[in-house]
Length: 289
Ligand SMILES: Nc1ncnc2c1ncn2[C@@H]1O[C@H](COP(=O)(O)OP(=O)(O)OP(=O)(O)O)[C@@H](O)[C@H]1O
Ligand SMILES: [Mg+2]
Image 1 (cartoon, rainbow, N blue to C red):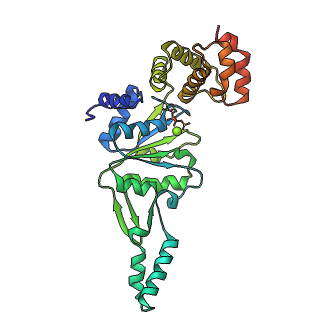
Image 2: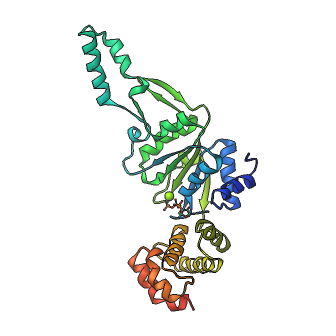
C-alpha cells in the first residue's frame, strides 16, 4: 500500500497529518528498513502527532511509552504480579493440603497469567504496531542503554520465563525535545529526522485541515503572526500546537479577523512566559501594522 514516500504522505494526509517531503521520506525508510525513526525538534512541531498519525494511516495499533525521569525496566517492559503470585501460592497450598512440590509450585508462578506487560513488552507481542517512545530525553542514561538491546533485536529475555521475540518489527518512533543530547549509540540504530516548524503555506494548510471552522483568511493571518513571533527569539517560540490553539481561541470568541486588539485578548493561547507576553504586548501595533 505504501510503496513510496509520496504514498505515505498521502496516507498521512488522509488522517489530517501533513508531512513534508523530508519527513515522509524518513517515515517511509523507517518502515522499509525496519529501523526506528528518531524525531527531534522544538516543542509542538508534530513529533508525537506523527506516531499517532502513522498508527491511524497504516491501521496499526499504537503502543505508547511516555518517558520520564527515573523510568525503569519494570515500568517500561514487564513486572511480575507479586500480590497475585502470593495468592496463587496460598491457594495451591490449601488445595494440596501442604503436600506441595516446591519446584512445581514455583514454576506455576512464572507463567503468562502473572506477567504484567508494560508498553515495550506489549509492543513486541502486538507487532505489527506503531511503538511510540515519547520524550526519550527525559529518561536517564541507563534507560537509554537498556533500550539499545531491545531496539537491535526486538527481543527480550525474562530470566524466569524465557525469550520473547516480536514476530515482525514494530514501527518505532522515538521523540526528543533535545533537553539533553541523546547518546550516539542510540542514534546510530535509528534514522534521524529534525522536525522544523512548518513553512507558511504548510502551516496555513495544517490550520485549515485541523480546524474545520477556520477561514482561509484567518488561517493566513494566524500563520503569519506566528511566523513573526518565531522570528522574535522569544523564550518559548510558538509551535504548531500554539497556532492551532490561537485559531481556536479566536473562533471561540467569534472573531473572524486577527488584528492587534484580538491578539491582545488571546495572546495567552500562543505565549506561555510572562517575559514573552510583555515583549510582544509592547510591539503589538507594529506586529499587526
Ligand atoms: N504536520 C502536521 N500536520 C498536522 N498537524 C500537526 C502537524 N504538526 C503538528 N501538528 C499538530 O500540532 C499539535 C502539536 O503536535 P505534537 O503534540 O505532536 O508536537 P510535539 O512535537 O510532540 O510537541 P512536544 O515536544 O511539546 O511534545 C498537535 O495537535 C498536532 O496534531
Ligand atoms: Mg510530544
